[in-house]
Length: 341
Image (cartoon, rainbow, N blue to C red; front, top):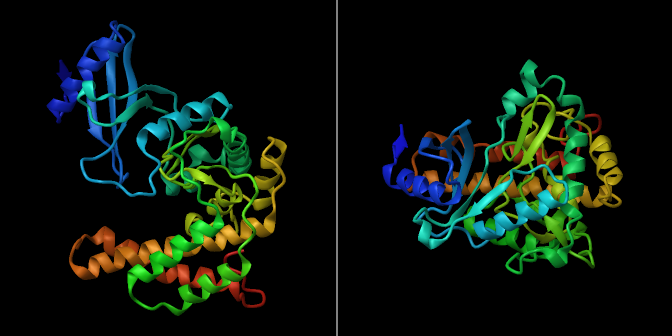
């Protein structure tokens, strides 16, 4: 029933599911877990059919308990369906798993062709034609997402405007248990510059950045990994993609290392996303930089404790020092030496 499948129980269950859903399809081939996705599992596989393999992705929950901030896989699947119906470029969801399927909790979606690795997207010649318009692609994609009627969104989606998100950052800083003057200064700046929560909260992807964008030679092909989606300020997504850590050395290209804010904002407004407030976006850029810095510091503490002695954990942990520089450049830039802006 399976072909080259290193995980027979899952492969057999998927093959049985495929036989029920698509009688014309046969065995499962190429089942492998993809790297990344610390809180959710992502598996690539294909159903074999008369016309050849049908490439798919299984996204499922691990056995361990996931973060309370995660939207939940059933909610993710519903959001992907709503986004697709609204014209956003996302993978097509084929099926949401049930307990009877014996494949765990999750859903099956189409596998998109493209690249998610920043180094390749920003440097390889294959993407040279796409890079000049990627910022506009991102603006259009976010406009499609933010246009979804909140009344159609799943009831399980949490509300997290700036007031809630800022309280979460304070808790994250306290939980690290190690003083950091720059992070403390950034928290104070955020508190003093926090915008008023919008009267109407909209769908926010929550992690719109490199790694979660499938990009091909023609541009953005899909927005992935919706586990941090919530109701909030749409300017949060516009700020997150501009955080310096996602530029990968291309500092003069604020949008993901490949574009300018002006192109991102113009495309967003042209696609019907509403007026962009640059001051609000700037707040969310500083917020995002600090959020990433706290995540790095948390990984450093895990490494120091001995709970996870992996080199990857240590390498990410040491990047907290880079964020300190970014935050100082946002809050107190030196004349003529603006790094983050």
